[in-house]
Image (tube, rainbow, N blue to C red; front, side, top):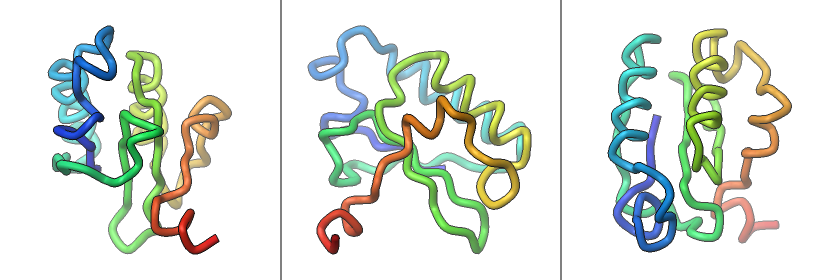
Length: 109
């Protein structure tokens, strides 16, 4: 799992009501529970949809999720990962609303 931070994602200036440190710590706990890891990226070039979380299973296609701004969004990610995550479990309707097109694919379209 890659979590965007340090540009506009993860900043109090852009999202003053989000506890970014808590959210990152929680995502790390969730990832560890399913045998995954979290890495932090400085910028994933999709600032208009911040906060961005990218989930990718080994050898699978990444799933880009934007607007991850609430505990409920993290709850949904946790539930999805515990059900098997990318390539195994479908996204819930709520997580489908968070799905975004990666920046490289938007430019190509």
